[in-house]
Image (cartoon, rainbow, N blue to C red):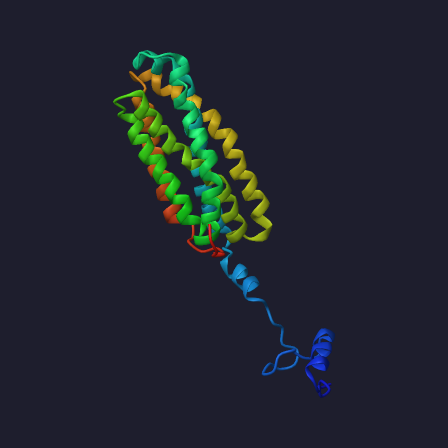
Length: 239
């Protein structure tokens, strides 16, 4: 049966709630209107194969960030001897990235909401690469600490990666994706000390450890650029 004639806007709205007509003029009866944000969210999701590639790229990047947090821990005694300083003084090599990471994480997370997650994931990884180059050729302990501070900005990758997963992965894979990226913090931290032990066992000095970090950061940047989409919600606003 056809929909009954609807008079004023109040009658039209009540009829729309009953499911007989669309509340807006110009649309045929029974038209379903979808909000723009919901439609954009639906359009931004990816298929299952792409979601696996996205998750793999983010997991590699997250593991790399976690690796760099622990690579210097076994090196602290060697660094103290190399720079002829105390173990307390050289411990800034470990503390500096913790401080910059604490500052950068909320700032870059907010910028990621405004301008998109992928660009804000790539920039911390680029700083991680730059910091690794600085750490591989440090003329002094202060320069080494500065390089480590640059590396610490990459900690902001974790909330950005989780936000990207929520935006682009299919709903039934979101929790799995968040779990995988979260697990890389523990796995990468363990791998960092193992990598340091293996590298220092076959090389001389601490510099080769950071050469490995350079290679890994370039690999992570390549995977992010190739497999992670640039889409996702951009909410705008001010920092």
